[in-house]
Length: 398
Image 1 (cartoon, one colour):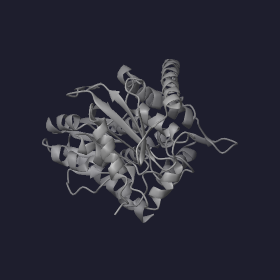
Image 2 (spheres, rainbow, N blue to C red):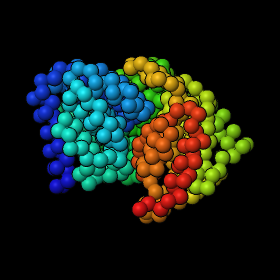
Image 3 (cartoon, helix red, strand yellow):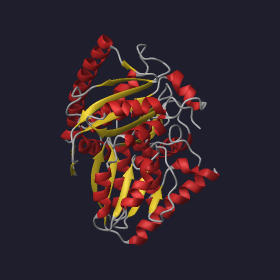
Image 4 (cartoon, rainbow, N blue to C red):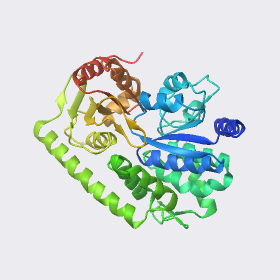
């Protein structure tokens, strides 16, 4: 309980700093899947309660160019939802406008000594970002700190938390308990959860998969905006039909990819196995290659003790912001279960360290969790990236 009290105290401090600043506009940068969209919605609602106008930018990765632009203009509030934790130094260094930076995230992170940076990551208070807290739960607790009546949005924290596998634990239990108290959340006879109330939110898992497809497959076609609308107003017929079409598109792209891998196999190096989707997922965000890697990591054709790496080409466009200088390669890393156990016991290095380091060696960047990480780097440096990663994962963590 002491850990929770300390974490909640940090949320109160951030809220008080925002209120005392008197700022009237904010930029919210958020991730492009269910957890990112739910935490964005909760953050937007909370910030609006404080009388602050918001501009939203949906990102697959936290591009330094976007950070430089957002933090370099006028003095305002900048909130990072389901993003930012892995790039504390970047956020500190680019803050030329001396803006207030608030990070609502659960990815691996480091402490900030900068008084303008509020890194509200529960990992800093002894919780696990992989097991105890989604970004949606962090954003929900922040929203409740701003206004306790926002507990009515507990379902959004529950939807966002479905990406965390296994039994619900830690901070993720709080929105369920709150929802049961208000009657917004009910237990099904089989032990699942369902929502009741004026907003049609569907079941947690169905809502999550629809938001994932809207945010990633529909990224360049207004999908994140539809996802935000679904979070706040519910999943109407138009949203469900759009998601169905996008799901079909992704299914076809995944089938094409799977057939190619079955036919040609994965490319093998000493410690890693990889594939390059190139233009197979054209028109979708880089998130889709990570989802495909997650699925692939459980298939029998995968070597159980090698890191699994997937790549795809992505265009330079960022909807709602502008264009990056050039197209990039998105890379996602996953680990099969036997390798995950080796990482947990310290026999092999975590992806959250080796994948970002390898991206940086070729002019890119990355971040993530112990057993799932991603990054971007310039097109044409794939071979150098793979060589760097294969060399890095040979080393036993020190």
